[in-house]
Image (cartoon, rainbow, N blue to C red; front, side, top):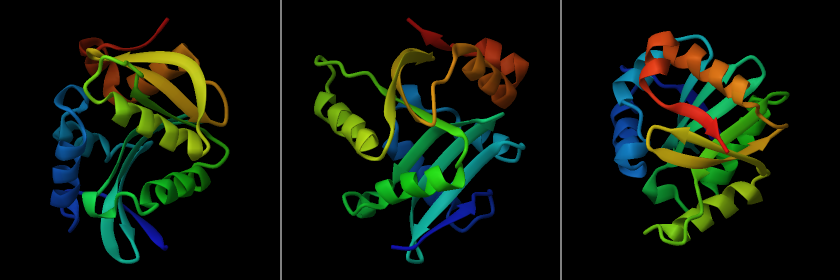
Length: 182
């Protein structure tokens, strides 16, 4: 399987596919405004990747970088490529691309009362199988609390705060709740 990562821009041929996948793959309360993400992707330290497998568009990866931290903000694989190892291949490629950096992501907490509890278990196991480890930290973004998984070492609350402030800017950082919680 040959993966190709291309920086996504509004005039990219895959732009509409990526936007549609993003809207389908993530619940409303977990999505940042797509326009904001697209605008921020022009900023140093933000990587908005369109991913193709063997020449066919297969998914997206959005990573925010600051110092030696890389935050996998969003990863989604197109429905027709799910279950074929594409997500694992993207994560392995990302670990090589961001080698020497602490790569981390946030997943929904395991909550037995959640409608998608089985999906949450499956998603968590997917990341653990692909080299991510529990960082024993929780993160609240907006109204949602997540568990943090990562590769390459722990992430401190102050480091996450600096990453998000650098990404969102001082004003947006104050408008949205983005913090580590106990």
